[in-house]
Length: 403
Image (tube, rainbow, N blue to C red; front, side, top):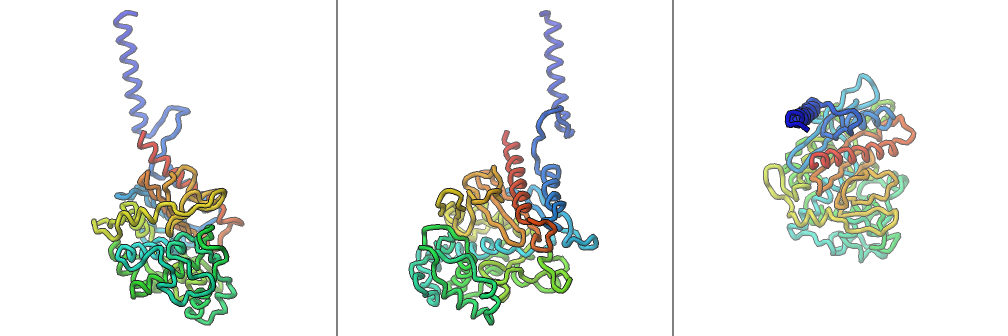
């Protein structure tokens, strides 16, 4: 081959590379080439909107980020199915966080009290709550409540909750519970565990759970829109979770146990914004340090609580302390298929979820009001699919940036 022909081939190759780079920069790609996932609307919009289209929830807010930044934050749909309803605002819309209360408040409060020497994980629950003294409960530990291996049943029945005359009577029923399985032998996800932990926080700290959370968690995190029993003035920007006499109900806790206990309990009752819960997710990924550099929890404690501690194999779910771990035991996992083995998260009945993959330095937070008049026959199934697809898309976007 002549030198001038060789030069032409080299020049053509260089131009080809430059054109390919320009195409990538402009958002174009060669025909047939796979689209590289990014942290933008093209990656996430269709997934969240599909859940609305299929009738699982009227609106949603999504936040995806790392320990030091929120990469994507967006609201979708409306607070109700009505075209006249307010649109979801990812900054301002409040959600009934349901069982995210268990990790944002209850688990975090126990971590803080553990670091202060006020709680011992392997101490019997009865050390803090002498009323918890039914047959077989003397050996149940704080750790077993956190990992849902206490042997207690999942919850009281609706009739038991309804017929309790007040919160004090309901607590007496919880204290009288006895393990249905030998403690430490299986995972049974139980609201009773979280209710008891909320009372342990009250006893060990000397403050009610909601007051402790406001002073020791929300204030340091700068979570101004998060708390129990939101005032009526916030109802207009709160996503409703039910209908009463034909009107949407917003700002009243959906969970019957937490409602009977006055709206603030270890298992549910918390309301918050996507921005605030994202701050919490970042705080956990940073190992217990707030955005302004203040350490609330020791890194070793965060690591211990978010590491898988209970798993009995097969199709059962794995648990960390307070948190769910992987595998989730679901046919369609809310953590998706790509999140790593050290991932941890939690979901909520009203349609909320938070999953983090510390190895990818990634969190995915989806808040919906699935509990509000779903149009789908199987809204939870649709929501699980949406959660898993979002987790997979976010993981793929991280992986694409590393290659």
